[in-house]
Image (tube, rainbow, N blue to C red; front, side, top):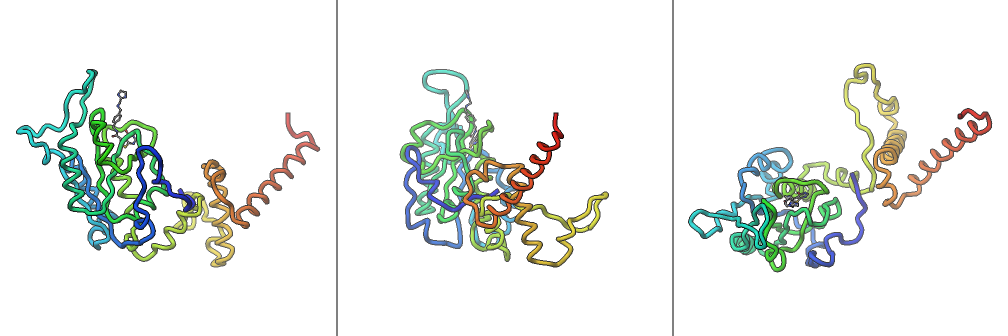
Length: 287
Ligand code: 21W
């Protein structure tokens, strides 16, 4: 998936406050993530695999999950309570959360705070890019029915949802945000950084991919990819990319500003389809 790099997605009236403008122009080469959660153990395997692990090892990102329970002063470390006004379910108490956020903010000066909530702005690649320009992110994961509303007003910079479906808490959402942001940190992907990001920034789905063998269960690799003809390969990939976007995600094409070449390819297909329809019209090959 891909999107154009325009505007400022995170700057949004209401629950979204202005991002520090200087933060989005500088290109820091690291990022600090602190996750506040009642299930910090959920993050251990996440820190320990793939590109996130390598980014931590190479000091491109620093990441930790902190238990909100550490900040529950009460003896039994209770972090939730019954809702005022009655009803089922529990609400996360404000004091432990506030203490946890303040503690993390002190450690990470200049960090922004994100609350993962079904009521947040729906996360996308543009938001990932804006977050990747920051130096610190404190991600607050809710559980139960949600967090006490008064947390949001002073202590939360952004509210983010990852889509219109119901999760049991914010932890998986936080991992998704961290995953998407991490791969945008310069150096986190290793050598092919620039190319990787380019292919994700032109507003189209990626072209089809093939590797050995040439024939897999009777299905051949497109011949042009074996030809070594770079210009032809590049043309095929553009057409593959456009065709997949048109068939699978036409909504992306509606959003996109087309290049001259992309427009020419689409126009060529239009003409092909019109030719077929004209032929059918003439011969009445339809019922
Ligand atoms: C789910 C909390 C539903 C509160 C009516 C009565 C974080 C999330 C979450 C959760 C409710 C994200 C209800 C996409 C998500 C998250 C837990 C509302 C249910 N409705 N992005 N009771 N989807 N979810 N209460 O669920 O914390 S980001």
